[in-house]
Image 1 (cartoon, rainbow, N blue to C red):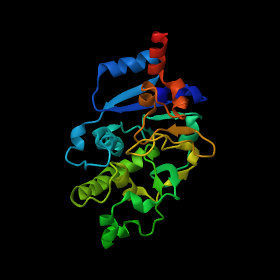
Image 2 (image 1 turned 45 degrees about the vertical axis):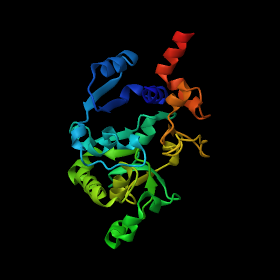
Image 3 (image 1 turned 90 degrees about the vertical axis):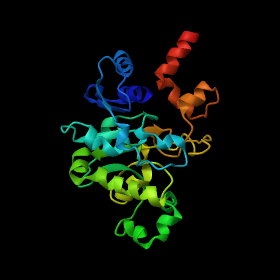
Image 4 (image 1 turned 120 degrees about the vertical axis):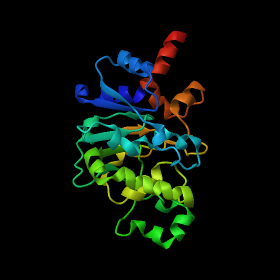
Length: 270
């Protein structure tokens, strides 16, 4: 709800923004809540069948990363209608403080997806020694300059993804992971294996990620230097939980004005 509100508030033409919500359960309450809060919102709800990934998910370093919905992004080309040719995929732990149309307007060229790249990050750390010690696996990135990118914010050409069979390509790495343990972090590494070094890079301002701290402890982190268009609480610590516990990090106060659920509780308590 906070993500929706932030996108609408900062859009020059909010009436042009359409939302596609992926959920494990199609509950009428969810539809009613969105409709009553945002009466004029253009949106659709889609059920992601968790059976699609049952038996394909490998245990990661954090339980939340093992949830089936964390893998729904891989199957957008199957879930969304054929007339949806491009989407901005967003995790739910974000707020946007700029016009989302600027991100939508990125020129993908021949690329399948666009995202901020972080080439200073230690890319090798996203895969295990088992991966790098296997000569054939280590050749995966030959001819590419792979950089880390966060899959919680992506502009995706769904039509090209569909025609290229990229869901199956990601699944092939997930199948290998079940036997060889080549990575630790849920749905992110198999997407990196397919796309890293072959995406359209966009400005870092569009994913100020890691505000939830690391994946194990979730300790407070500050903002990175530079302009900001999107704030992303990736990591273990979530702002709504820390605010409810009255143990917020400083960055969580940036989330609070958009948290309609929290605002209603404060109003009732007042």
